[in-house]
Image (cartoon, rainbow, N blue to C red; front, top):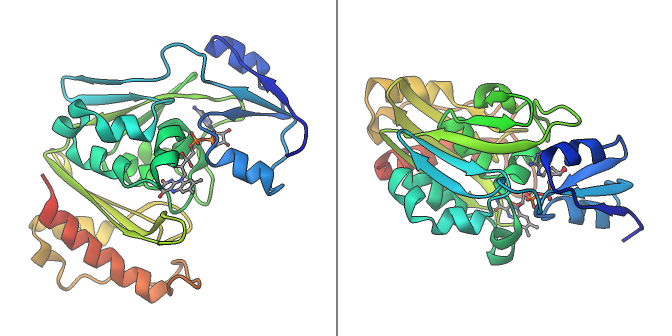
Length: 262
Ligand SMILES: Cc1cc2nc3c(=O)[nH]c(=O)nc-3n(C[C@H](O)[C@H](O)[C@H](O)COP(=O)(O)OP(=O)(O)OC[C@H]3O[C@@H](n4cnc5c(N)ncnc54)[C@H](O)[C@@H]3O)c2cc1C
């Protein structure tokens, strides 16, 4: 590791003031620190969000689950409130990485990083959640903008994510065993305003599978997807799986998710 400055703000305003152009936000460090060790990033300073009050925690109120940006994956996985309100979300958090990653990694860090194979983006897009920052509220459909790209500005900090309660939902993940990220993951949600299907791992970024949404809008059953094929064009093609294999997995996992949805 090379030298860098460590900054620990006590408020969001202080954090913003400390975020000069050479600085990066530090949350759980599970993506940023390996990136620095491999010299893929070399920020001059890290601004650690850990001491800022109010950025961590889970609230279930009315028809919404709110999760603070600094909430660890393990907390979401273990939360009885989340398991009751949106079981698919607790289940997804419990499938992220290994124990160490779940004990350090945060939802805000995962969303800001927007790894194309990360799990949380599928839940956020699949449930039509809203990402709140120190500046604004961003709808999931506008937040994810491709490979490691989001709508976040340079000095914008995610503060929390609010998830509307679905009628039923489930997440199915086909694990890439070396990294534990999703080779393909599919989040299916039946909501009051229609069916949403979000896919991670298969392409350069999380995306909605509209052909599956249309078919499931007609009949929310696995059989409704029997004749729906996902095109392999533009999907990831690497040593872990061909684009055709991933395309096939999307439909298979979507069917399993529909069968498991509750
Ligand atoms: C071995 C291993 C296995 C993993 N397996 C999985 C897996 O199966 N599924 C999965 O989804 N993920 C997996 N991860 C990634 C993990 O989920 C991380 O938690 C996540 O990628 C980043 O969260 P973090 O809190 O560690 O963020 P950090 O690494 O601290 O930060 C990541 C990026 O987000 C920015 N950032 C952090 N917080 C905020 C904020 N509040 N506002 C704005 N920007 C912010 C940082 O500046 C940085 O650019 C794995 C990681 C490792 C090391």
